[in-house]
Length: 273
Image (cartoon, rainbow, N blue to C red; front, side):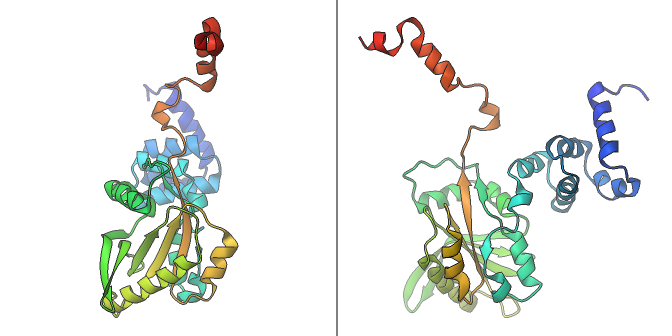
């Protein structure tokens, strides 16, 4: 065989060293493309983590770009980390599956919101990037609506976002908050879930689930707020864009470069004079 580049030969050697079990190679790495495999070899050093990302790529049909995104945002470390009351509010195995589907934190790097943004701005931005939002939520989330209207006792109420999960077979209500978690958010979510269960839930569906997304949370406050709540709900943080996109890194001057430029030929003081 001819025509292999040095780069490909090195990848082949690394692949053989990483996966010495031929049966396993046929079971997992052979089910994804070579570009998926080289991405995993480059970006993931732990063997068990490599296997996990490879299996997830197969199960979810991730493209190479999606795989890169999931690795760079440390999906494995975030998966199942939301604080919930599922253990007492849901039966097994529903509770285990629901816990594994929620993350903490959620990464909304595709959004750019200013410091004065309100919850409605966050909602609108997520709707404008619904495909990215669904990707971050994970497989199985089906979008039902935003500002979903419910009438209770002759009054109007609106859910920030309503989803239906195809594996859990239940509705998921998402409440968006721009600040830190507050205990009263759990009471409001409990009300929403009662209304959804009464008005929307099919008799064969399990209880609806609530997810409160906020900028940050205090674990003890969240645990106290959820402790005696009967409706299943979880609390997780989200992160907005915190650094320049990779394609822009290296194209803008550093602080050192700017300071050097400004202090050349007189600097600030002489220019001000």
